[in-house]
Length: 305
Image 1 (cartoon, rainbow, N blue to C red):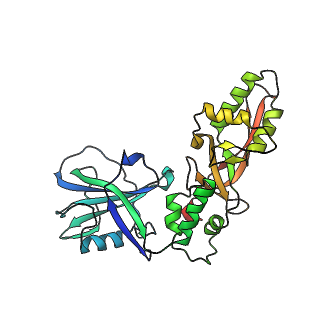
Image 2: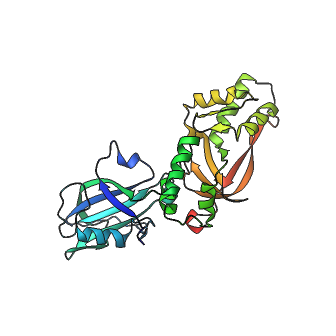
Image 3: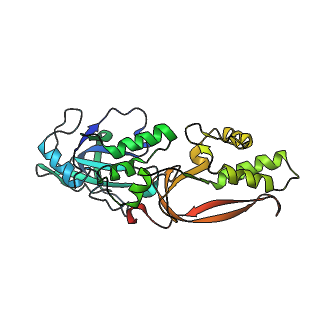
C-alpha cells in the first residue's frame, strides 16, 4: 500500500560510508554480466514486499516503469536489478526486497544470488518526502529538539500516516510521551563498579546502589549527563566521560507502552520492542560488593505487537 501524500527520491548524494549510516533506506543498482559456476550454497534471507511507507515492490516497480527515479541519467538494460533495504540500527529490524528489469519491465525478483556476475552501477538513499505537513513527524522533531529523544526512522515512517484518533499503543505512547526510562547496560555497570571500588576498596555497595537507582531517571539526553538539583552525580558523569560519552554502549533508552512493554528509542537496540523487565544481580568482588540493576528480555517483535 502506498502512503498518501508522499513521494520517493532515489538520491546518490551521501557523504561517507553509506553502510555505516543507520535507520535509512538504501538502494543499490546492479548490472548483470552473465553467470558462473559456484560451489557456494546457502539460504538467503526471505524478502518482504512492503515497508508500509510507499517503499514497496508494487509502488516502486510502478514508478520505475513510468520513468527514471534516480538523480542521474539511467536507461535500464535486461536483467538489471535493484536491491532495497532498511539499514536498521537493530539487526533484527533489517529487511529488504529486490526488483529485476526483465522483458522490458521492472518486476519483483532478482538474479541468482550465488551464480550471477553483477557490478554495482550506483547506490544511495531513498528519501520519503511528505507533500503536506505531517503532525506526527513534527512531534518527533519536537521530541528531539526539546528532549534529545530520537524516534527511530523505521518507527517514524510506520506511524507517519496513521490517523490522529488512532488507538495504536505505540503511536499513543510517542504522542503522549512525558518520560523515558534508562536501562543500564551490563558493561556500564561493570565499568562504574570497577571505578568505584578502586577508589573505595573497603566500602560495600550500598551507597553506589542508591546512586545508580536514583540516577536512572535523571539523565538528560540533550546534555549527555545525569542532572539533579538535589543530588550529586559527579561520579557517574565522570564514568561517562571515561567511556567517551558513548551513550549507546551505556544505556538503552526506552519509552513505556503499557505496564509491561517498552520501545527502545536510543541505543544499540533502537526500534526494538521489549517486555519482561528483570532485576539482575552482579557480584563485583564479594557478596557485600554487588549491584542490582534492571535489564530486560526481548520476547516480542515490534511487528507482532
